[in-house]
Image: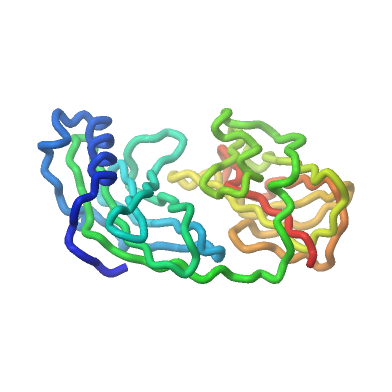
Length: 268
């Protein structure tokens, strides 16, 4: 993640900065000075890539609340943006924008930028990171995206619907409406399938709530777990055959618990 080349023509970045500045009340985004972001960083920038190599989350804390975004791409045209947000929106001091649509084993360059409540704009120099090669987890296909949601404890809103948990995109989220440890979601695979592993990728809020720490899975009438939630699949002691899989939050930090993605891996 070392600084790369000097800043060049970045129409997408400037457009995003103008939008942020406008939302924060700047009179003229075009005339606003650009401040270096480094003096307001409270921690080092950390980028954690998913084992698939297709997504990566940027994590950093700032000394003041700012609304942040990340411009990223494989060359100077960039072409993609990840916005730092949670359900309340606005400025934060704990940031975690998720970069999606990445290619495994590829170098990317990015700019971290943001604006505070007074309309001051901050921006980093161009920096780089590399995605890992896609890991082979030794499992079959993820069956969840071809399944159907047959129930959930609740949906926070249409934008946080349970279907987001099985759409194959960890950039979208299912959120319950404050169900905490009582959150659950049920997936019907349409037919009985032999399954070797499951995962529950928890959503989270910047205030530390909404994190699912452990979960259980009920396959037809058999309860499995509790298992740790996270990005890595949980291998079952023995493959299990079933059609309906219910995922229940077991222990959580409370609030609008839910998942960025749940996965149900077929046995090879």
